[in-house]
Image 1 (tube, helix red, strand yellow):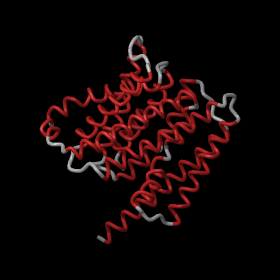
Image 2 (cartoon, helix red, strand yellow):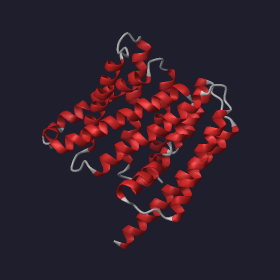
Image 3 (spheres, helix red, strand yellow):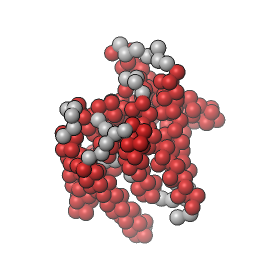
Length: 295
């Protein structure tokens, strides 16, 4: 792997790892910080969308329907994950979030009847054991709310998998710029409606909070733009494997910047989660190569 690629992957891991730290720094409710993140990300994409505005006008009613569903799932993901970070540790929340490929596979099995081999099943089992160990370790912490935070993180994974499954299987012939812009904006609107109905204050935040909202939109977005760029040079499995660096990077940042502690159960459980997901991704890459060779 060339040095520029390694450097860009490192930068992207650091950038995406800061998302959890920004949420922890914010005193705003989870649905507020996630709402403004979505709105700010939409604004960032506006220049590109303006260039591709003709494509936006050609979207069918069916595509708008699935874009709306995807936006709602994305809104749920961020609201739940940001909420989890208010209750549990960065280490636990991000480790559970790393289950995303595994949950996506399970979703594919039940929805699309995709077959699961024994090696893949073992990888899933290892990852699930790891999550149980993380939760067991959190039981020993002073506040029982951390378990609720762990559950919210797991539910956020289910929500983001729903968002990804819609994007992968229902929305076709559309640039990722248009897709991202529309879904981000709809997610922002969905969260806006929730905050309005629930009576959550959407104004009156100080400059520090507005700065955090902006950082939440800009810094992780940089990571995703780097991932899109690197797809021209490396395969998707390499990108997926690098994303597993987020729990490690976020945990290190939480220890350094937030003073959080990591206990033995979290370390052991986190290792099993990352091992299980890593084995699954390696198996997927092997299967892809075999299918490509056969084709």
